[in-house]
Length: 86
Image (cartoon, rainbow, N blue to C red; front, side):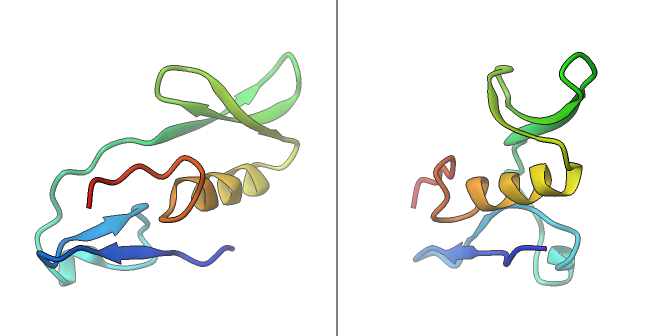
Protein backbone atom coordinates (compact mmCIF):
# COMPACT_ATOMS: atom_id res chain seq x y z
CA UNK A 1 0.00 0.00 0.00
CA UNK A 2 1.11 3.57 -0.60
CA UNK A 3 1.20 6.53 1.76
CA UNK A 4 -1.87 8.75 1.84
CA UNK A 5 -1.30 12.48 1.52
CA UNK A 6 -3.79 15.15 2.56
CA UNK A 7 -3.67 18.95 2.44
CA UNK A 8 -5.31 21.27 4.93
CA UNK A 9 -6.23 24.67 3.53
CA UNK A 10 -6.31 28.01 5.38
CA UNK A 11 -9.93 27.43 6.42
CA UNK A 12 -9.07 24.06 7.94
CA UNK A 13 -10.65 21.98 5.16
CA UNK A 14 -9.02 18.64 4.36
CA UNK A 15 -8.27 17.80 0.71
CA UNK A 16 -7.13 14.42 -0.59
CA UNK A 17 -8.15 11.05 -1.93
CA UNK A 18 -10.84 9.41 0.19
CA UNK A 19 -10.00 6.13 1.86
CA UNK A 20 -11.65 4.09 4.56
CA UNK A 21 -8.25 3.59 6.21
CA UNK A 22 -8.89 6.88 8.02
CA UNK A 23 -12.30 7.42 9.63
CA UNK A 24 -12.94 10.95 8.36
CA UNK A 25 -16.43 10.88 9.86
CA UNK A 26 -14.86 10.85 13.34
CA UNK A 27 -13.03 14.10 12.53
CA UNK A 28 -15.84 16.16 11.00
CA UNK A 29 -18.71 16.10 8.56
CA UNK A 30 -17.56 14.86 5.13
CA UNK A 31 -18.65 17.15 2.25
CA UNK A 32 -17.90 17.86 -1.41
CA UNK A 33 -16.87 14.28 -2.25
CA UNK A 34 -16.30 13.81 -5.99
CA UNK A 35 -15.38 10.70 -7.93
CA UNK A 36 -11.89 10.99 -9.43
CA UNK A 37 -11.56 7.84 -11.51
CA UNK A 38 -12.61 4.23 -12.08
CA UNK A 39 -10.58 1.02 -11.98
CA UNK A 40 -12.03 -1.55 -14.37
CA UNK A 41 -10.93 -4.84 -15.89
CA UNK A 42 -10.43 -4.85 -19.68
CA UNK A 43 -11.36 -8.38 -20.78
CA UNK A 44 -9.94 -7.97 -24.30
CA UNK A 45 -6.47 -6.85 -23.14
CA UNK A 46 -6.64 -8.81 -19.85
CA UNK A 47 -5.44 -5.82 -17.80
CA UNK A 48 -6.78 -3.51 -15.12
CA UNK A 49 -7.27 0.06 -16.33
CA UNK A 50 -7.49 3.31 -14.40
CA UNK A 51 -9.99 5.45 -16.27
CA UNK A 52 -10.72 9.15 -15.98
CA UNK A 53 -14.34 10.13 -15.38
CA UNK A 54 -14.70 10.83 -19.12
CA UNK A 55 -13.42 7.30 -19.94
CA UNK A 56 -9.83 8.07 -20.97
CA UNK A 57 -7.40 5.27 -20.08
CA UNK A 58 -4.79 6.75 -17.73
CA UNK A 59 -2.93 3.61 -16.68
CA UNK A 60 -2.89 -0.16 -17.31
CA UNK A 61 -1.60 -3.01 -15.16
CA UNK A 62 -1.90 -6.79 -14.97
CA UNK A 63 -2.27 -6.33 -11.21
CA UNK A 64 -5.43 -4.75 -9.74
CA UNK A 65 -3.50 -3.77 -6.63
CA UNK A 66 -0.83 -2.03 -8.73
CA UNK A 67 -3.53 -0.17 -10.69
CA UNK A 68 -5.18 0.99 -7.45
CA UNK A 69 -1.82 2.05 -5.99
CA UNK A 70 -1.12 4.07 -9.16
CA UNK A 71 -4.56 5.66 -8.81
CA UNK A 72 -3.88 6.61 -5.19
CA UNK A 73 -0.50 8.18 -5.97
CA UNK A 74 -1.74 9.98 -9.09
CA UNK A 75 -4.92 11.42 -7.56
CA UNK A 76 -3.48 12.27 -4.12
CA UNK A 77 -2.02 15.65 -3.26
CA UNK A 78 1.06 16.23 -5.42
CA UNK A 79 0.09 13.54 -7.94
CA UNK A 80 -0.09 14.27 -11.64
CA UNK A 81 -3.91 14.04 -11.71
CA UNK A 82 -4.53 15.82 -8.40
CA UNK A 83 -6.83 18.82 -8.77
CA UNK A 84 -7.59 21.03 -5.82
CA UNK A 85 -8.50 24.66 -5.52
CA UNK A 86 -6.72 25.82 -2.35
